Image (cartoon, rainbow, N blue to C red; front, side, top):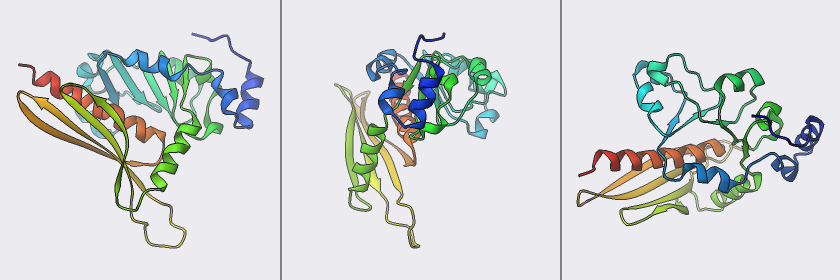
Amino acid sequence: MTRAAPGWLGFRLARALRSEDGLARWSIPPKGALADLTGRSVALVGNARALAEGAAGAEIDAHDLVIRINRAPMPASRSHGRRTDWLALAVRMGAADLARLDPSLTLWMSHKRKRLPWAAVTRRFYLHRKDDIDSLWQRLGAQPRGKAALLGELRRDTTVVSVLQGTRLPDPPGFGAKPEYMLSTTTLLALRGKALSVSVYSMYESADDLAWIKLATARWIEDLQRLNVR
């Protein structure tokens, strides 16, 4: 689907100037993306080589929404499935590759705007705003080293409480070493009259990691609830 949006030259100028408002003209609003997730099961498919050794393809395709990451290799439908409903991108991708995957929504998750391809914004497109990315970096950097800080609540209802935390790790040795950060989620679920605690961890290097840990946590919750229905 081609969007009637400002032309290629306007996009190139907005990208060259790192204009968030200019690039956001092509983006659907956050509420538009979140509305598509409401009440739906989600399969978040990474690019680990180990996936090719399994037979999860049918299980992946059975979900309401299949989200893949970057170039999304699919060597066999038996292991990887066939569908790509959403594509979370942080790398350049040409029009031919996007047409092959044919996602209904392309999400640009990287803070590096110069990599954003024109082929992505001419489809249904979501831009993860840089001020949101920078805000998280600032919040993580302000925390005492080695101490987890609450970043937000992911879910709260009668059977589930799930929170997102961030930790600035102790500085690695060496002058000028880059700070390292870790994200984690902690979820408490009530299942069959018992309380279960589930934790998910990821190093934080880009917005891709934030999106992954949120979606991975949501899938754990969904699968545990489905497997423990009375």
